[in-house]
Image (cartoon, rainbow, N blue to C red; front, side, top):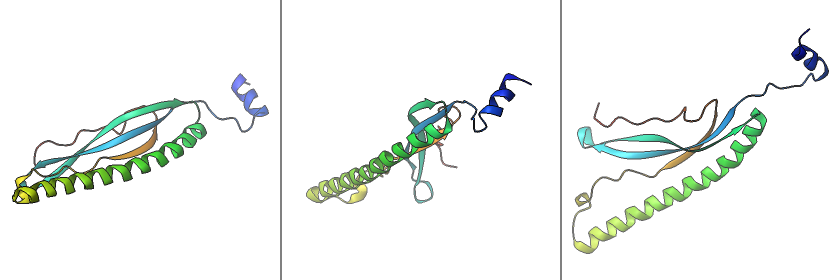
Length: 130
C-alpha cells in the first residue's frame, strides 16, 4: 500500500492539490473597417489572475470577482453611452453630420474564469476583413 492509499483510507474526502487560476479578462472591441457595411472585432486580454491550491477556494474567489466584473460592465456601458452622447452633441453644436466622426468601437466588457494556467482565454482579433 502506498502512502497516498493509506492517506485516502483515513481521509476519504481528501482532494488532490492543484493549480487553479482565477483570471479576469477584458474584451476590448475595435472597429475593423467599412467593408460590407462595417465590421468589428475584439481582443480578449488577461487583466489579472491569482493562483489557488483548491478548486473550492478558486470558485469562491471567482464568485466575488464576478460580482465586481458585473459592476464594471455596467459602468463601461454607461461611460460608452455618455461618450456617444458627447460626440453627438459636439456634432450638433457644429452643424455636422454624425458620420463626420469615426465609427465607435463599443464598450469594454469583463469576465472571470477558472483555468489551469493564466492566459488560456487571451486572443487577438483579426485585423483584416475576412
